[in-house]
Image (cartoon, rainbow, N blue to C red; front, side, top):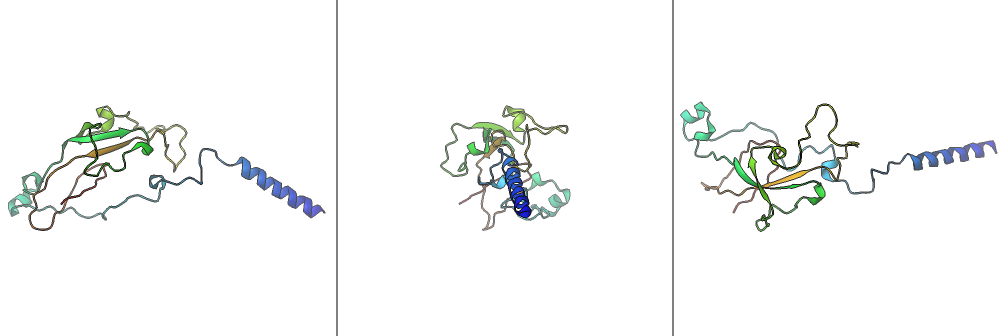
Length: 177
């Protein structure tokens, strides 16, 4: 009899703690976005390696100025740009050739979108830039996403075309043909 009462008390306590310890801000049944998974640190990325750059002559290679090579092409300049406040509002198919860019603005690359009129700077070393942070879950309603797009032509010499980009905080998709 005494063991049955203790067993019921134990089960009741577990049920009480289970119900009242649930956090209503995190829905464990919702689909986790890939950017909410802290174990994913890259996607569709080559392994790190030394950047080798072709030069036209030995002298150019020894000078080390990439801009002298006929293989160099700067993509600095104006790019099409779209900014949204929430990841759910980002354009998912903007890389497709027939995507309509008429509603997009232009942005200078390289550059910081926050300093070009999109969003607000949130860099801080004192407090977290998001209210009530819940790592590893970034906020769904205040987590801006910028999408960049630029077209350029490449003269094909032979059959191998290789792209090297020196970028910060930018994901790219390429198609040619």
